[in-house]
View 1: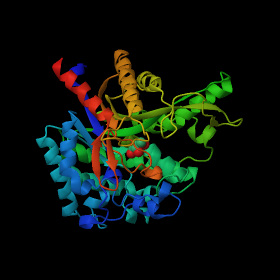
View 2: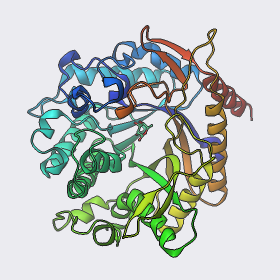
View 3: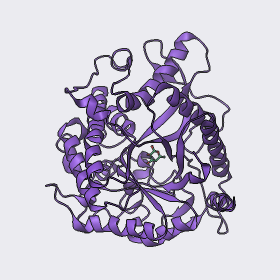
View 4: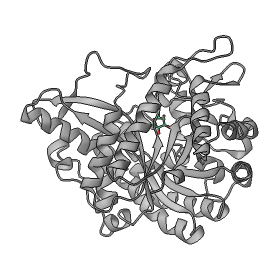
Length: 439
Ligand code: FCB
């Protein structure tokens, strides 16, 4: 595809930036509950105020436009727009309406994620994603929102990173709702994916011109020991991280080895017809990529993560490994015959950024982004259809279980004053995009 049509954007998510958790009839989400529990989030941070985007959205849109990007990826908070009985909450809906309008007025494309982890707490109280009914509630929410914003959205993504929702939220308890049982994780995943598939016809019916897809986090797993058992460990890691999600979506089946070799006895309850619903065609696949892991056999049928020494890492401790993005993209194209066009919907780093004399010198971020842009270009040269790239994130925000300590933004946030300061990386991106305009 023509590179001049390539879309450059920045991304955020509702709970991470909005704050105003009780404003205009918003209901509690599982992240309000989880972050209020002692010990769950670093420094006991919560999303109560976050970047106060709910009140600062107008100037934040101006900020986005000032970067010279083509598009903005945001998410809608389900608990803002629907009440417990499934009725629309007009004040919540109006917030996003105004936001989408202003983005359009600034010439920005709108990439909207429908579920970036803020499940209404009242649904969790009825079992959350362990309850099949939640998939149906999700499709009703999507029906409402897509009717409401018809024609105002360029691309709809049903879910952000179902792997994190299912595994981190229900499998090991690092994320809300904080449950820890692998059987829960596999069942939650199934219902998340079912919700995705059930929502697609509503999107098609209500907003036929918008693109429809889903966003998956993917991980690169390699091994520093070349024994067959260690190579198998690396393969299982990628199976668990990537194919657990992509298999059902793109092949209509869970990958072999997952519910027997890796997690024996963890088969979810799958009703007849479910896999067809989950495998419904999509217009695009969003890929979120951050790092590589080094795996070795755990001596049984699994893998253990053995961090490599002497490699470059970010504030998260994640290895900087751009080649991994290229390898994964090329690998997916080989493995999935019907791989849809791809958007890199998240990529970026956390760094311990500070404002010094009005400047934030985040040179590691600039270097990281440049190397990952090159990796994407290489994958495109190798024939992978990548249509766009969104930096995670527009601004520093509530980094889930790590709270505000980890700073992923192109824009620095002073949480005491809510001052926004463009980091050097933001200025570098702006210069890079301005250069593109000239060619
Ligand atoms: C992804 C999430 C996103 C952000 C980045 C760092 O897993 O989708 O919200 O927290 O990680």
